[in-house]
Length: 214
Image (cartoon, rainbow, N blue to C red; front, side):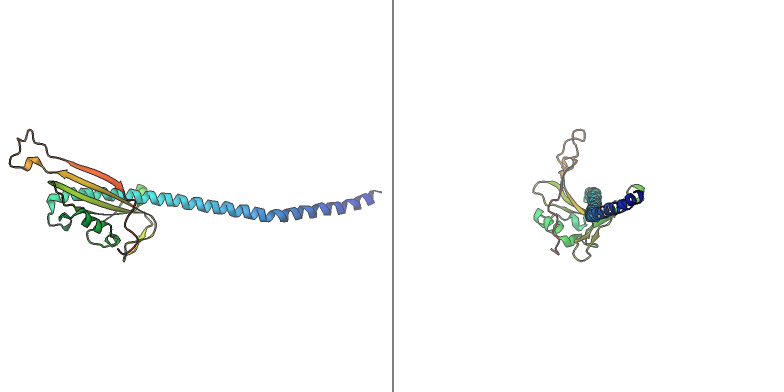
């Protein structure tokens, strides 16, 4: 009786193994799909993180470049009156300048370019900026300062100025300084005469120059 029982168990074990194999084969596509989704999700998350990092680099570079050109504009008002950027233009003429993408291609006239040093010696990106003096009906000085920040991995077309790779950010500021009453012949004494300072209005350019030669 024992040998018969032993032989009877073999087909049952083989059947159970066969069923387990069938179930495993049925689960393999689902496991493969789940693995593919997990890998795809990880890649998407990595790309989103990289986009956030490059975007932050571009914003930082734009902010630093904007401050540099603001300093150049304020310091240059008396230092170099022959600078073509010191020639007053209308707001429309100024926009035709900074809003033309070719004005931002590498090597463009009047474009100030700076590479910044970040933490650990790593560059957070490159800044481009320019400024123009605005004609003002009232006495005083006005400058429009525009800056473009580029992430460390950014690439820009040398022909059109368009961004080819990486991230960019645009910022702009309007600087204004009222006429100095202390310079007027009829100004009051130095004790009561106060030299005016600069005021600043800042904004992020939501609609930067279009990706066309312009």
